Image 1 (cartoon, rainbow, N blue to C red):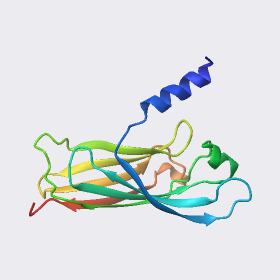
Image 2 (image 1 turned 60 degrees about the vertical axis):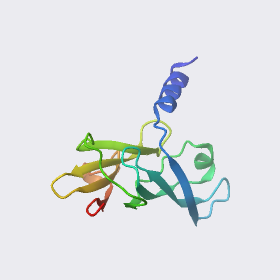
Image 3 (image 1 turned 45 degrees about the vertical axis):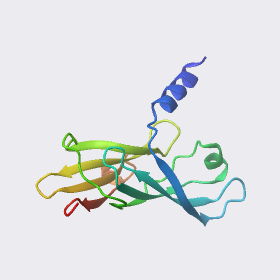
Image 4 (image 1 turned 90 degrees about the horizontal axis):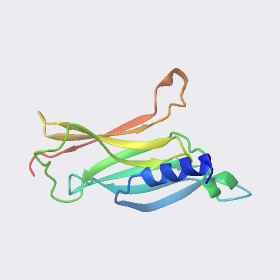
Length: 152
């Protein structure tokens, strides 16, 4: 097996297997060859806090490269999280943890969602961010959503 094949296999094995559901997508740019560019909406259920669901919209590149899974998707996304049932933070919940991620290029780029816990306000803060900065000045694209656990 070549070094490239070994590296690719290692990356694919290391990808997290979170509860994900594709809600739907809309085509944004027509491509003659391959699938169209699109915006996809996926639901992720927090693996550590039952009753919390996050909805992530993200751009997916189409064309031949996108259809083959080798295109790098742009770092454009939005995040909305909410109670989808009774939610309470476990006592052992870490103050900062990556809860799920989506590959946005074949090897190096991933869109991740981290969960931060504001214990003083009993609020979960979900931060979507890209592992590879493509913006001038080096600031990664990001978005946040909060879920209050008050009254649960």
